[in-house]
Every structure is written in structure tokens, then in C-alpha cells.
Image: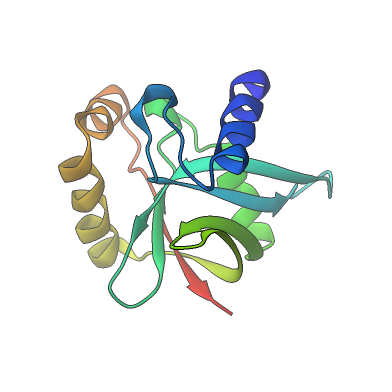
Length: 139
């Protein structure tokens, strides 16, 4: 998985935030986070949905696995992070705070992901867990 992620990160940065691999286009952000246990900085490319209020939503889907992804645990432990996001000039680096959405807001946020991609519907069908949705707000 790390080779796949590195390929996506390299393509994102080389093409001003556009990733043609798997048809991602400009729908990804790069999330810089710190390991909850290790303290090691990591970068994870994730699908993000920009919101009208200037925030972003990301979903801890882990392709429908029965456990949350490691990056989710890292954001809970260390919510002040940095993202790289596509913009009109190419890529911007933004300092954000990660907040796990409460159930009522989570359901509305998750509906945006399933409307965006059938892949997210499939992830939901594969797991018994409720997939968390996280809001990234500018600091």
C-alpha cells in the first residue's frame, strides 16, 4: 500500500493536485499526520469533499475493512494537521484541525461520499462498523 500511496503522492505533486490514476482527478488531498503511538510523520492521500463553508470532509472507509484506518487514530490523537489541497494556482498547504463528526452530522456527510462514488457504497456494504467522517477546518 505504501508504494501505491507514494505513486499517488508523486503524481499529485507533479501535476498541481491532479491525479489521473484511478480517475481521481482533483478529488484528493494529502493529509500530513503524526503517528498516535510512533510520533512519526506520515502522508496519506485521501478523497475529500470540499464544503461551502471552506472545510473538507474525509471518510475513514479503509475500503470497507472492519477496523478504522491508522490515519484516523492519528487524527484523533493529534488533530492539528496540515493538508495539501488542489486550488486555482495548483496546490496549497493549509493548516487544519480534524474533528470527528457526531452521528447526525456524520450521516449527512457520509451521504455525500456515497453520492459521489459507488465505491463508498460498496465499502459500507462490506463492513458492520459505522464509517467515521471527519471535518477538516482551517486553523
